[in-house]
Length: 235
Image (cartoon, rainbow, N blue to C red; front, side, top):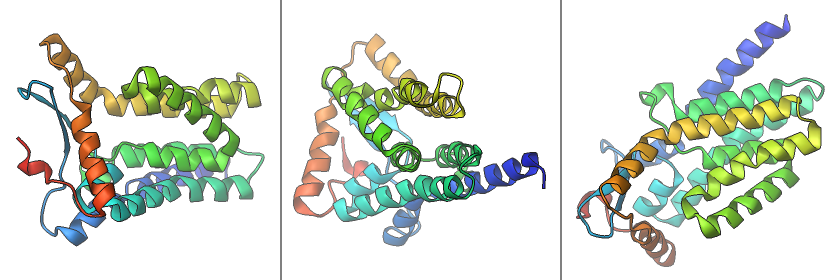
């Protein structure tokens, strides 16, 4: 079989694996027939809100408690980790594992099973980075946390973008790993564009987001071990 066919099969399989939404499966089990709750971040004046249409571990944690949220996060991470690690172990001299990782992320962000409306990609990216470079995962996300101290909204995306210089240092500027890091950074940003547009419009109208509202819901859920207040009930 030619390498082109191998890449085609790997990308198709990776995309279908990534398209599995464990968050929606949990919602289907615990709230059958109901649409998953979106995360809505109100403004400090209560006059507007930013709606995140991603459905992932955070939604599950707030809706059903930290145990379910952690389960979804782990499963999403395994989606990225297992195919990447398996192909890296089987074909260490090729880039099949990188193609699979990118395909998994595309499937997670735009799943064919759910009208191309997926999750945020955080856990899946961490899983694939763990398979490719565990040290890189620690260093880049530590850098992202540092960025988050000054600009919380850019914490995770900062960690992703930092994989570009990390892989350039580790493998060379023109390595497949750098191409992989650029690809996942672009895909993550593309998936965030709807929220970025909302944020731009809110700031243009003079609104300030109250991130403490969502954080308080997460803390309440984590402290009680039960779900936070229903998104649909918030004013």
